[in-house]
Amino acid sequence: MEMEARATDDCSVSERPPSPSLSVTRTVIAFVRSDRRAMVGSILFLLYIAIALLGPSITLYDSDSPNLAVRMQGPSWAHWLGTDRIGRDVLTRIIAGAQVSLQIAVGAVVVALILGAPLGALGSYLGGAVDSLVQRVMDAIMAFPSLVLALALVALAGPSVIMLWFAIAFSSIPRYARLVRSGVLAQKEREYVYAAQAMGQSPMRILLRQILPNIMAPIAVQLTLDFARAIGVEAALSYLGLGMSAPYISWGTMIRDAQDFLEVAPWLAIFPGLALAGVIMAFTLLADALRDRMDPRLRRSLSTLGQSSAISHADHPRVLGS
Image 1 (spheres, one colour):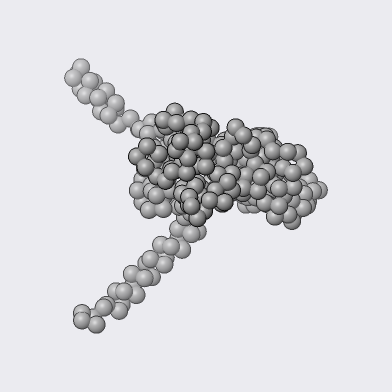
Image 2: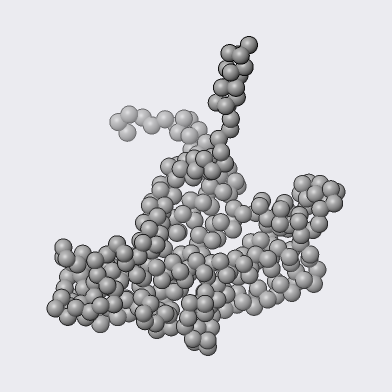
């Protein structure tokens, strides 16, 4: 009997379900392996995050210390990406610029999400005059181009980390408000919402605990796209002279300073430009892969297209030699 009980306990231990963190990890790995865009985007994204977090500690040079003895030198073993007009290592400054771009992008995306999502959720759930007022405010914000709006806000208040957060995030607030609004409008008439109301749950609890978890897919895609947009806008503002000033280093500032030396030292603009393009491409690839993965309508259309293509090939086989 003891042996049977021990065997039963061993079977029960072996049949325990995997932990949620392990299942999430497996899901992420399967998603990355199933899509080349996700794989390339994830590699570039992880490389960018690692470089931004480790920072200048992984380089041999100071990002602001000049060395006139090696000024305007091309890529070499000592300076992999060359040096600038006062002898600063270009690779070290690109790494420092990655830190600045990550800091600005994270802050801008978080501010846009915190301000936009509650406005869209409350407006759509309450409806009536509240919804109309929120939508008119969102329409007014969307009437201005995002870069022009960011330029105006930074020019009025001056460049700073917090000001850049709000300047870049301001034009993204309507995107989150409308995404959340459309999701709440589609979900609040579902059966599980009526069941929660019958159980006596408050409207705020229903909104936070029942509806919002079911509309996270488009928000995740928009977050990824907004990271790319925020990094691009920050570089554009810095290129125009409205970004962060010294001691902060921006890829946009590096490109602006290099435009006078394009003929004699093209690496000064090429390498920061490649870093900027690579990071934006990483977030764009991840957003495209997430959208295709999370949108069931798109998955159904793609699977239907694949089935119809297979049927057409079966009905019309290719003749050898043709």
